[in-house]
Amino acid sequence: MATVSAARGMRDFLPAEKARREYAFSVIRRVYRRFGFDEIETPVLENYDRLHSGLGGDNEKISFNVLKRGLGAEDLRAAADTDDLASLTDLGLRFDLTVPLARYYATHRAELPSVFRSVQIAPVWRAERPQKGRYRQFVQSDIDIIGEAGILAEIELIGATTEVLRELGITGTRVRINDRRLITGMLEAFGFAAEEFAGVLITIDKLDKIAAAGVIAELRERGVTASAIDALAAFLETEHADTAEFSAESIAARLPAGVAPEVIAELAQIGASTDSELVFDPFLVRGMGYYTGPIFEIEHADFGYALGGGGRYDGMIGRFLGQEVPAVGFSIGFERIVDLIEADAASAEDSLVLIYDRNVDPAALIALKNEVAASGTRVRLDKRAKNFRAVLERAAEAGYTAYATVTAETSGASDLDVKPLGAAE
Image (cartoon, rainbow, N blue to C red; front, top):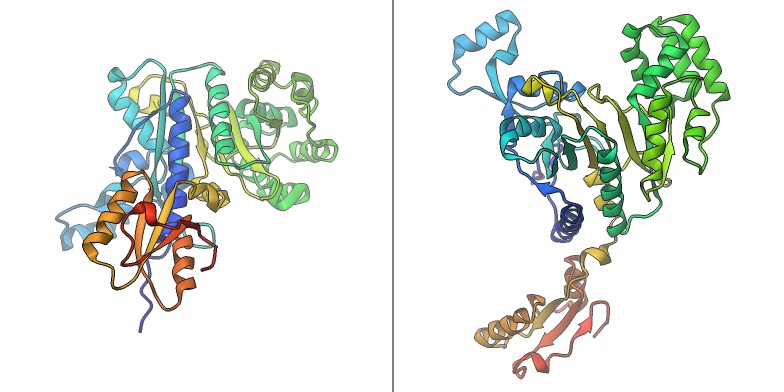
């Protein structure tokens, strides 16, 4: 028999996995609501032109597009003749939540407060090659503050996000932070030409993967300003590791002399205004070209990848409105953090499996189930099987914490002998 499975890059979730995800959703929503963020919802589809307006970076190349309705053979031939396959589409699945948010704000600005704090937790789609840890459909969890030009927004986002991780029981994290203006200042100080910045940043962003020698070699292959490469190489040789101190002095010590002291002061103020552990990383780039100010990522000592990230993107919403609107966002890597949640935390609610004998009257069984459920306990009925231990194991896998056996003589909930799952009978 052929294997029946979900489409490549898509996943089904068994009850225990779904329970853990729903637990994470509930904690995220509760914490962000407590911090004054309002949840919104946007359509899964956006206009093709909006999704391919240059706001999404490389994600635009891997978006799922939707064919126009009523296409005929002539349309297909015309698109093939002109090599314009995009003419066949008018919609696409969202590849992130930031572009839809920018459109949402432009649409509803008159109905929203002057400083708008939003939460979006929803699936997105990217036509990537599926591989371990990389899916074509996955959930993003974003908070954004629109309309606040000062660093108050960054401080709020960092504090709320780290509180979510704390309440989910995820410890050992810290926030790496940098600023796009500092990166630009560094490149200028080294002597790179402005038109070389984008390509140089792509290479520098690989520093943690190919190390300093690899970065320098790739830049020489790119053929950018040789003297600037030499200056960067010398700087990488002397650049020292981060320290526990987060101050204007410690930040300036990790940069070429004279780079944007006012920006350094802003970062230092962010550090002084939050209880979160911050570390300055002068080579934190983040791939999206729309970032204009502070950028940040959540790192964990046990993992070689970020658990979340974000930054300021003041220029994006203005693309829709024709005027600048300050904006900054922070996204939790939901699919990564959900695997770090302890199973016990996700199944902390009172839950009971009633394992009943075959001769129990159905009406009496339902009455007993309703009595238990009325007390606020999650309850499930399972028929007793020859392999009793297997029944218990399946119940535990589904997130249940206790069980009780029901016989024909059981007259009500007070007769139940409730035992924790894992206790053998």
